[in-house]
Image (cartoon, rainbow, N blue to C red; front, side, top):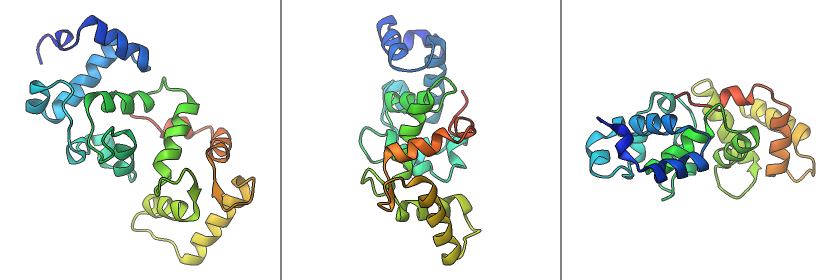
Length: 184
């Protein structure tokens, strides 16, 4: 990429630094990772919009059962394709420096498969199926698991988790920060 600092003006780097949890050096590193996904497209336009299939070549996403949802949540076009700024936002939220509250907000959006602003039993079912992969659990076990989650977390007994309820559950999970990250 040669002289990668020249990719952005000082003002652009200042803006990105202000809007993320990254230093200027880390922003340039994130851009280098973005560039490596499609060097030709990014050479033509540093903020190129790369298709989701290309973004999913990132090793950290390739193995993630929620990879499509992650891309869609961070996509400014809602189809999973990401511009550099979308990619930078995603990497920033998944960084160690992002606050737990921000990670919880994005996790909620990722797990809200039907995008109705609630994590419903259908969303939980999809989440568990993705996490268990080929080790699918029986319908009875699935229902028992969903009932237990709602028993613990559904404070208003409406059979759905609002963001506040979801965030409350996450606050009890000390390992959440460790599982919701991508290393630079």
